[in-house]
Length: 174
Image 1 (spheres, helix red, strand yellow):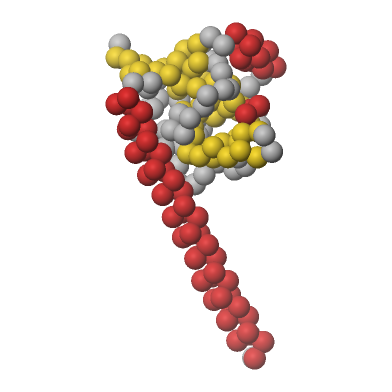
Image 2 (spheres, rainbow, N blue to C red; image 1 turned 135 degrees about the vertical axis):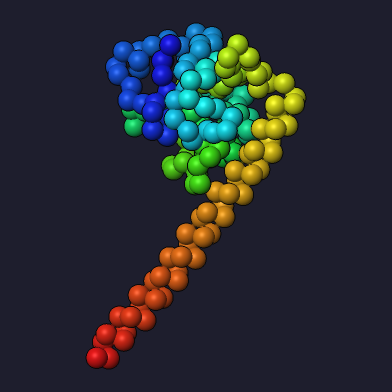
């Protein structure tokens, strides 16, 4: 099994793992991976396992994907699919993260889609309609949180910039 990182569910990936991931993607089979980190809490916690189906096609909004970026494996939820010039890009975010992942995830970065989660001999099949419904609710909440976080940051920037401009103009008068 390969561990999905410590910080923000990311971990350095060696050349050997690159080779292994390439074989996984071409095989279109599933593999079980250990989870660590907390960006997908409360659904995914340290010590749980996920079964990843290695495919890049038919990814839906709400799916949890694993992708490779900057030599790290990242496990996050797809919030929106954007089609640009006949290629797909994915807006993603960890369920407990406050902001969206940047830049958008390209289809070439994707290793696969999480189909099930297991912990303490219990397995959750994420393809069942009950979990698809819960996933939809989480997705809508994540979109709202990510958008609100962006607006709050923008408002703070405007407020602090106007404050700084006011202080600078007062200093010029002195």
